[in-house]
Length: 74
Image 1 (cartoon, one colour):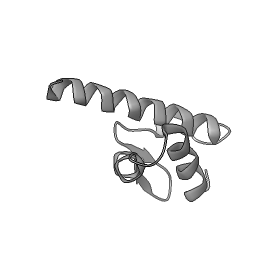
Image 2: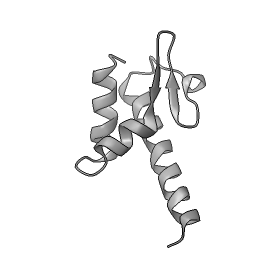
Image 3: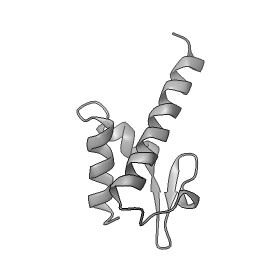
């Protein structure tokens, strides 16, 4: 697997994470709030890639999404 494959796999995982955050937040966030690697709220910007990297070893994408929703009260 080359670096391009790693990039595409990680990009897909971040897209899945964004979709789950959107769903789990009962749509209180909007797709317009999402950047490539961030979730930009009125009061702060959440670095989704950093959150994912921190938790990916021991958690599923779904668990990470729930964690973000609860941590930032989305």
